[in-house]
Length: 336
Image (cartoon, rainbow, N blue to C red; front, side, top):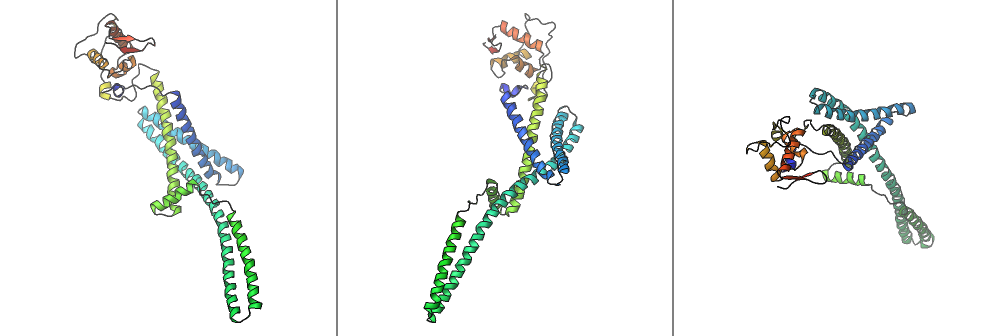
């Protein structure tokens, strides 16, 4: 078993990791709040009521994430009844937030579809005019054939040909105006909805509904996950500043529960610990020699639940035996 899997101790996350976590959390909370605001602000046109509904949306969003943070705090301290109450409160606020996100995302996709429909409607209007002119030209040609049969070429056919030429010019002008319109660009979200509808064999409206619900739930889960990461990291940092505290989440409970009983009051750096084969000292020495345990005071203290004084005594004795040495940066390494 390697040292990382046996150690119950990890180190606090670095600055880059925490900056990333805070950035992701802030972005998710802001996005969720904005989508909720889009729904609540549309409830009333009165500026005062909009301000009140907007404040209510922000309060719900902030309360939701604090309730999730409080759930993690109470669960970590073993207050499971309080954790359940915080979880229930979070779920209620999360349902409201998801509803707001659904309304906001759905409004955005509807706006994109509306723009596309308007552009397509302009093209369809030009196509209808062009088709109407084509039908008129066809009727004129049929009338011209009738005039030819009646030997009235000079009076009827010439007039119809002149009319057809004018219609052709109008038709060409309409085609030029239609082709000069901006291309109807299909946005990414609309393309995704279309592909989902084709894949699932449902209508575009149903595909849009399922996509909006999925994105809204995913946004809340994403934000809640990173809020939980922040809470766990804060609890771990608080424990990490107290070296004699018990780790909150040991990796290997069977190995971590072993306690080495070394009398630090009666043991001095010059005294030799018990080196019996079955003693914990022999286990530590063997683990360090096999490099399955990192040669570090913190690693030994976390793995074998030693006090700081006992670990200091142990490493002093190993130095006296020439088994470990201290580097210039005060880190130890095995030399035996």
